[in-house]
Length: 299
Image 1 (cartoon, rainbow, N blue to C red):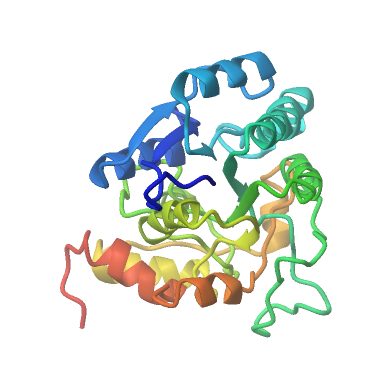
Image 2 (cartoon, one colour):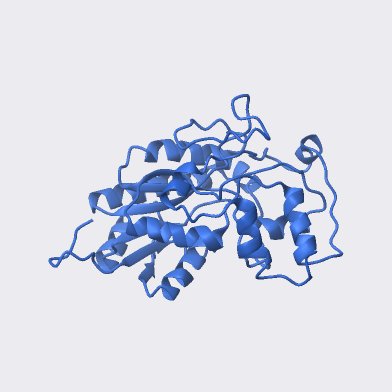
């Protein structure tokens, strides 16, 4: 990025795609709290002319892509809406990256880490996580398939910072997109340890990454893993002492979902090295999610 004549960095001005999305909305609030100028993109990502118009009008210093199709109520939607999923997740994201490259702009792209699954080299419970350079091994859902596809293509763009988000969680326990909110409402849950992303801690880090003009692929999760049951135990201890839940196994889960789900551990060493203050997943859950919402005394 260019520097002004006196050597100081230019005033930040962010262009954000994903106004109606969860992460996009939170980004706007963060910009307001940090007094960062920002605007939401008005066009659709697959429309090159509208992106060019947004950039020419807003003149951003950085572009954030929090738009994308995940499916409502869940990724099973993508199985029956494949063209719509490709149009946004692949064509749209590539178009944005390509236009921004022409304009000399860094794109912070919120991607997914749900493109891996535990395997022989990364066994469940081993603590061996998938690294940024590992080739995705999970294409069980069409959503994950499109995300792995576009991540590979985006790796050719030197102006893109790809952030692999997993099972996002925030302190807003009323948000239906919040992983904790989801599993507290399920009739039954599987109990598998996974890497997860605490948005309250990591979204501010993504803004800092933009300021540093970081690019490439990043496992954008808190270090370590946490199981569904461990989260629900915290929920019971901090929020609702009467909360109960039931478990079922992957075979039983498969009978009530259309597409398989990704379960994995991502190695967050690269992110932790760049941001040493990053908390482990369990520490972050307690500090950023459960303590702010605490309703019961914890023994």
